[in-house]
Amino acid sequence: MSRHVVVGSGPVGTATARELVARQSGADVVLVSRSGRGPGIDGVRRVALDVSDAEALTALVAADGGAEALYNCVNPPSYGVWPTWWPPVAAAFLAAAERTDTVLVTASCLYPYGEVDRPMVEGMPDAAEGRKGRLRAQMWDDARSAHEAGRLRAVEVRGSDYLGPGVTNAHVPVVAGRALKGKAVRVFGRPDVPHTFTDVRDMARALVTVAGRPETHGRVWHAPSNPAVTQAQAVADVCRASGREPVTVRAWPRAMLSLGGVVVPFLREMRETEHQFARPYVMDSSLAQRELGLAPTPWAEVCAATARTVLDEPQPAGAADEGVDITP
Image 1 (tube, rainbow, N blue to C red):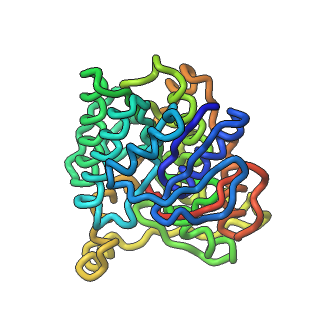
Image 2 (cartoon, rainbow, N blue to C red):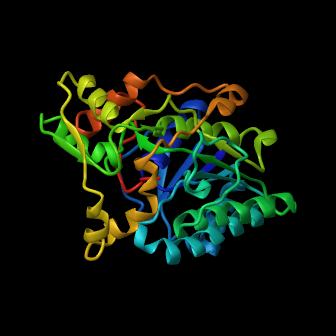
């Protein structure tokens, strides 16, 4: 019986656990979080663990004959704690993967690329200047270096801002609740520039796919994602998917980040990622689609799943069921 350890019980981790159960009948899928609590998922065992504890994580991965893959789907509770929260957690994942000879599969974001003026493709340099981008870039550099040295096996999948089942605390879902009530909404950056969005189910399918294909290891892949749309279009399409009329979408004044950031930590941290919504932010996933044989979930279904989550309506069988802070 195959065994998989998925760390992080938010939308990406939950979707990954569900994908593993769907693909591998009888697999032992362990879903790890700080509390170990959450709705029951058929075929999935929930475990509570401090993921910064390398010894405990290693023991969990090594148990019952060892896991085939260790999935890093965690995300810190807030932007402000990234500099202190991520280093010990990333080190624990590396240690567990190396000690158990288990492939480390990381769900990551586009931050390492930094500010770009063209579509992002695999192989672009990680040139971020902001601290969050540099931190995520260093995490991958450490994993890749260990992989190339033969100490462990590692692969990373990057996606853009999440939509889909279970996603509540990302840019579009945050405003969708108001939009679905017929009220005008405001977004950060510009509502009229193209931006790539990734369905959490497509991220999960990419993670599970590369985990089982050794030839994909040692590099970055992009999760299959639909063509970029503007924030205004994304909000409008979520409204239409639930049978509602689109609403007006305006931008927050740019000064809000500067002035509000003085007293609101979240707004202060948003300054580093403002460029992602102020100009085109497009991820090209054509290589992964071609080489991995994956296609993104149809856009209409992405929007419908997002609307159902925001409206707190029952999800179809197989959908993720938890929402936490996962803005990539």
